[in-house]
Length: 287
Length: 352
Image 1 (tube, each protein chain N blue to C red):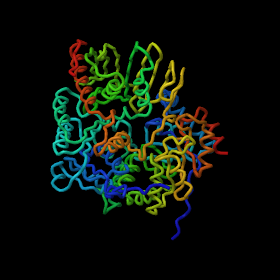
Image 2 (cartoon, chains in turn orange, cyan):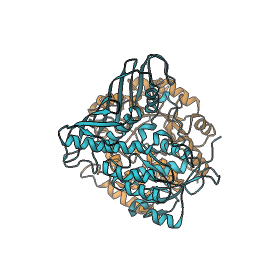
Image 3 (cartoon, each protein chain N blue to C red):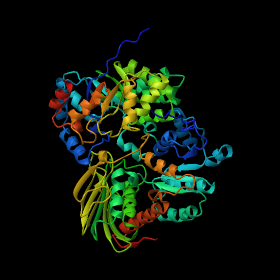
Image 4 (cartoon, rainbow over the protein chains, first blue to last red):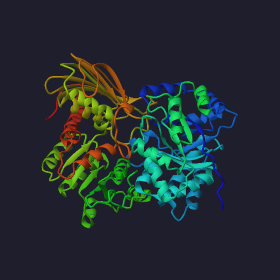
C-alpha cells in the first residue's frame, strides 16, 4: 500500500515562547508575554498570521492559547507540540512525564479516557513503553487546546532528545504512527539536536514527516555544529522545518529564513518573539 | 561527515578507552546526564542506579540499555565503572557521593552536592581523601557568557572594584497551598549565583541577610550583603518573580575604577579601558550567539560539565570550574545566609 503524500507545513507561526523557555532575552520574553496577556490580542494575531500565509500555529496546550482560540469563529489549524513539559517541572525531582499532567479543564474527561484507550491500543508496550506513555500524555493534554483542527503532531524536544540519546528507534516508529492516526496531518519531532536526529532517522529508516530544529546563518543552537547539520540536510531524508531563524536575535528574520530555505529547509517556524509585526513579516516570508 | 552515533549499550568511540559512567539518581537531572554520557565521545553508560522502582522502569522504557540497580553496591557487585554521576535528590547526594568516592570511583556531582554546612563538613574529608577526581558541575560556570565574564574579571582589567551587585529571579508563581515540594529559592537558584561570585571574586568571609517567608518556613526572598576575603563587598538579591521568563535570570554587575561589566544569561556588556579576552576597548555587547559553544549533544545543564569532566579522566587536570571546594564553600555560605536571615540580619561568619 502506498502511503498518501503528506505536506510539510511551509510556514508556521510559533507561539510556544509564551509558555516555554525561548532563546531570547528575558526582556523580550516579558515584552511579548505582556503584549499577548489578553486573549483577544493573541486571537487577532493568529488570524493575521493565517491571512498572511501561515499554514498552522505551532503551540503548546496552554490556557492562554485556548482562550484565544475561543475568541475566534474561524478555524485555526494547530500543530501541537506535545507533551507540554512545562518549565515549572524543574521544581520536581522526577522526569516531567512522571509528574501527573493537569486536567485540561474540569468537566472534560475525554482526554483521560482517550489516554487509557490509547495505552491499551499500544500494547504490548503499554505503560512501560515510552511511546505509549507519551501518546497517553498527548491525549490528556491535547483537549486543552480546545480545537479539533489539528495539522498533525510534533513531539516535544525534551522527549525526542531523550529517546534519541537512548537509541530508542521503536519510539520514533510508534510516535509517527500514532501522530498520523490520532491527529491526522503530519507527524514529526522537535529537537535540540537536529544533526544527530537526522542521522539516526536515516539510519533507522524512519519516515517521519518532518523534524523541527534550529537552522540559521550563525549556526546558533545547531548541534553538533552547523556544518554537520547542513551536511545531513543536503543528504535528503526527513524534511526539516527551520526554527531559531533569527539566531537569538542577531540576524533579521527575512535573512535567516532565506538562508534556511537556501540550505534545504522545507518549512519555516517563526516565533512571536522573533517578530514585531506578525502579519507583515509572515507575509514577506510566505512569498 | 558525521561521526556515527552511539546507543547507550555501545562504546560511542568504538575504542576500548571509553570511560564508563554509572549514573546515581534517575530524576530529571540524572536522565539528562545519562543522555549526555550516551552521546559524549569517549564515554559509555555502564549502569543506572535509583532506589525508586518507577524511576528505574521509566529509564528502561526511555530506551537506555544499560542495566539499572537499586543501589551502587548492587551495581558494583556485578559490574564496574570509572566514574559516577551524582544526581539524586538533594537529601541523598551526600551519601551518594560518599559511596562513589568510597568505591574509588571518580565522581561528578550535578550542581551543588549540599546546601548546608553540616553536609559540607561531612563531604570535605571524603573529597580530600578521594583516590580519583571529584568535580561539581554547576551549569552557570559553563554558560558561555558567564565563562567569558569570569575570564575578564580574572584578567584584572577593571581596576579596583567599587561595586559588585548580583541578583537572581526565578519566574514562578505558587498558590498559597501549593508551594514548591522541596527546597527554597536559595536551593533553587541563589546557590548558582553564589558559585559564580566565588569564581569571580573568591570566597565570602561573612554575611548579613534578610529574607521573606511567603509559604511557611522556606525562604522565598533574600537580600544579602557578602563580605569577601580581601574586604570587598557584594550585594545579592534573590526571589521568585513574575511569570513570563521560564528560566532563572542571573545578573552580575561589576563597577571598577577602570571599567565596568554587566553579565547575565542574555548578554555580556563591558566598558573596558583596554582590550581583554577578545573584547575591545570601550563599550561592547555580546550575546549567546556571539560565543562559541561546542556542545556535541544538548541535554540541558549536563552537557557542558560532563564534557569538561570526561576530558580530565584519567589523571588529567580538573578544570577550575569543576572544583568541589568551591561548591562546599557555597554550601557553608548558604547556611550562613539562612542563619543570618533567621536572626534579623545579624552578621554571620562563613567558615573557610
